[in-house]
Image 1 (cartoon, rainbow, N blue to C red):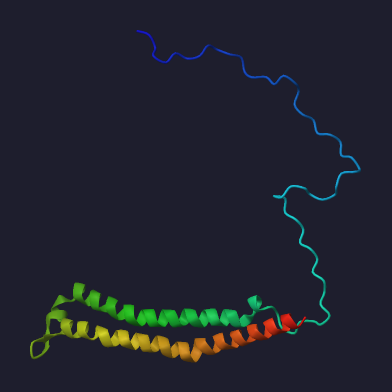
Image 2 (image 1 turned 90 degrees about the vertical axis):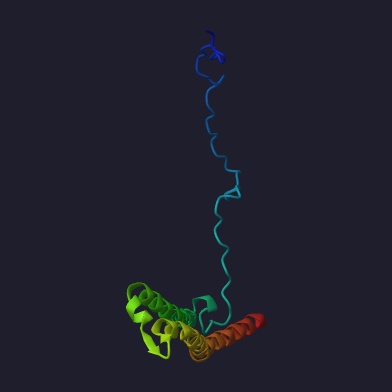
Length: 158
């Protein structure tokens, strides 16, 4: 039986016709800067301003860190209030069925009562989110916004 795909005849490894390229010595007339675009360039020196800045740039301001932490706290508290109650309801449904089926009054079971209380708890979580936004997050955001506007006016005056 013959091979449908015969292998090619053996050939010696490829050898270039001339020796490998040797680098040319650098000439004194070559430029001293890098000419390739992918080589990182040194940043241009920023001229010093006549007046020293009294406050750091907005991106490094400590109020941004405080705002991030206040917003993070706000999200966590509101989310845990709504989801925590729902998880409690699910855990009680799974592991305490006798408690959830017990009657509270007039044919109303504890599970149904806790399920109906989910709506007011969600409304409470929404109120808590808005309250913390009004009292903790919004004043910080307003202060940062005012600082940014003052910083922009100072930069435009130069």
